[in-house]
Structures are given as structure tokens and as C-alpha cells.
Length: 253
Image (cartoon, rainbow, N blue to C red; front, side, top):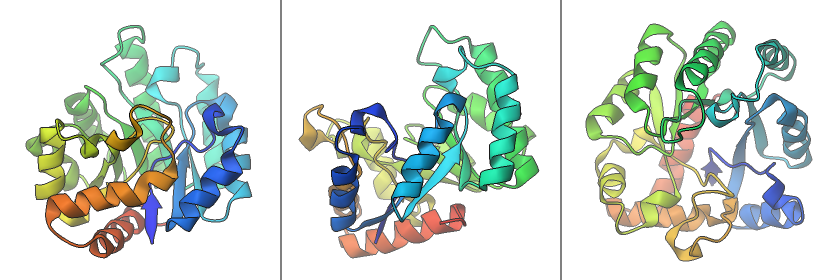
């Protein structure tokens, strides 16, 4: 069994063939899919999508790239959803300092407030960490949560170790499949296997063999195969270990 710990199955890119996409993933052995919301106005669609497919579970949060259109009242809405829906996690939340048109201070405000909600409800968090790993670690040391997943991890070994010390798993997916991604591939090969979970981030971060086309959760078995190659083990071992890690960090699975 495989678990896709980060897949935007509710994205508009799947509106025309979502049933087929989910069926293909299930046929390939992807039995659980975590679907993180990105903005309050999408929560209802996320709920509808995960409710349609057994094995799917939701996380609710405000993504750093959506904070410019967010209002503080959205945090009240998020809190109500955490109370009523009992999601797998708070997410997708975090910081993105790669972009230049989303104010860092505004990102940090929403990130901190959502960490506080995760702490209040004792929920793990799904973290967006692009070009912002040290800043995120700083906030995690100050506002302790029960752990979670650093999605699409692309930091250093030292940063990886800091996340692990704080009780986090590290998400690896399509970026690992590119031969030029030497740092990510080295981390995937060398980190403790129990610290790694698999993800697609579909429809984004397509693996090498898709040549930039839409990613989908059905690609996870081949992604798992790449991790197995990098570590010199069989794919069944990777599936079992990463699924166990996902369940450990997301008990609601």
C-alpha cells in the first residue's frame, strides 16, 4: 500500500476527469491520499472531493501564496472547520520566500496564527517551505506543534535533521526523479527511511517522465520505485516503511 501525503485532488486541473484519476491511483496501489486545502473559499470543495473517494482525507489551511487575498476573519473560519471536521492536519501552511509579490510579513502572520491553531487542536501541520526553511524552523521552535510533514523538502542535511528533531517527516516526490536534483536525491538516499514520506503534489511537480505534463497521484508507484533505486532496496520495503511513517505522523489516516 502507498500513501500520497500531499495531493491537490480538488484542484481545477482534475475537474474533468477526477474519477478516472483517483481510480488509476487506487489501481496502482495508492490507497490513501491526503488532500490539503489552500484557501478558505476552497474548503467546501476539498471536503466534497475527499467525501467522494474512500481513502482520501482532508487538511485545512491557508497557503502562503494565498494570504494576500485572505482576511483575519478567515482564521475564525478555519478554526470552526478544525472543530467541526476534525481533519488529518492543518495545511497547507508555511512560508514561500521564492515569490516576490507576497509580503513576507503577511505570510508570517498567517503562518504563526495557524501554528497556534494546530497547537490548540493538537494537530500535525503540512508545511510549504520553499526558500524559507530556516524561518520556518525558527517559528516551529517557538510554537511547538505535534509535528507534521515538510512538504517538497529541498533543504540541507542539517536542516533536515532539525525538522526530524522537532518530530517532522520530510516529503519526497517528483523532484527526486530528476538526475540533476543531486541534493534531493542524496537526501532521499541517506536520510533515515523512517523520516521520509512520499507525495506527488499533483497536479504540480511532475516527475521526470511526464515532461512537464500534469502530475497525478497514480504516479506515486513509480516515484516510490525511484526512492527504492536510490536506497538499494525493493519497492515493497519502501511502500511499507513510508506508509508506516505517514500513519505515524498523521494518526487520522
